[in-house]
Image (cartoon, rainbow, N blue to C red; front, side, top):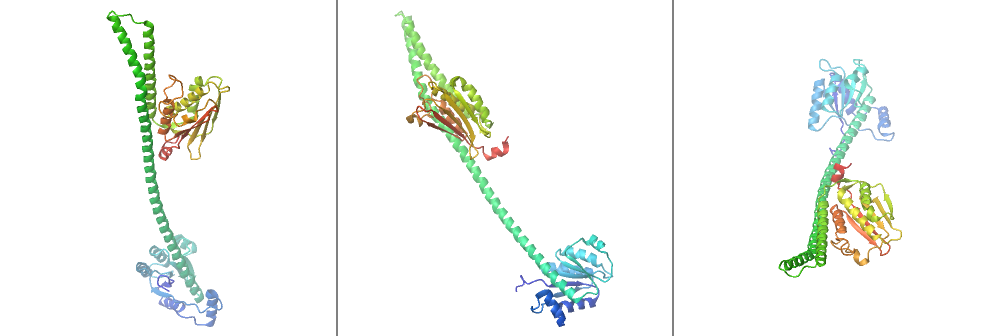
Length: 448
């Protein structure tokens, strides 16, 4: 058996009587002297058929308490601690056994101790008051029995060994926990960085989507403004030409013709004004500060604003489930739902029994989805892929700028959400607004 795994049989005897030391060596270091003793030891330690017990203890001596403390301190420093100490309770002129035990435990907290006493120097209450009730301490009365001493030596050294194994196991577990903690800390740090990178990428994606939407709007705006602007310029040019001819003494301008040309110019100017206002609305909503928004309240406001376009005959069904607040722009979201409800009202103008349903529910991923369903004319299949394009409209000329759904798309995509549409001509349409769960840093810091 290696030194690392061999049991610790080191015993220290602390007693001022040299004869006591000789007695302990005879009991613990010599082979048993009688068959009766062999039989008793076999029954106690190995069973009837067991081989004689190997007493093999290493016994050291100290004749005063201070000497015993010094030997224990040195043994600990050498890495060869004692497992057990037999300590006499009376050792004049030095410190007594109780104080010796106190100081021994300061040097080695695992040391097992047997206090040996022939007198009632201390009551049990006094000893426990000074030493405390400890499983490391036993009392042995003199004169002691050899079997009792040997039994104590075997039991307490084995107990010391088990205690050290327990310490080693605890140290191993502590190291494992520390290692797991370090690995977990590294994993958490890596996850935190990945989440931060993902958040930055999502922010860049949202910004790119906003720039894309803004770019599409800008390109379309120039084209859309150009047509009415051409009408205005042509009309104003015609009016100026007619007035110049009249000022030079030419024919009189036809008031009816001039009025018609002015009307064309005013229509063109009105078209430009509506385009600019819609474009300004998009820009304003895009820069709105974000906060926690109660969707049910937003939907109620949007329904109130769309009541004129929906008309008094439209049956409105509300199904607002217990949805959580979302992180976004309250004004922007209200404009989105107001635009979708106004579109539904336009689609329901010729419906026999107009009906619109607004359904809000929480998704499995923590986000929210709002559906607006109508039973109106529906959307032709060839138009479904273009309805969110800037300036695309199926309304008659002069009735819309074609920016309404594009604005809705820009606001929702700017919040990291999406708009979907399902429609069958003659059976109505369903617009589905999906809004994401709030980011973790916002949810933890700003949750209402």
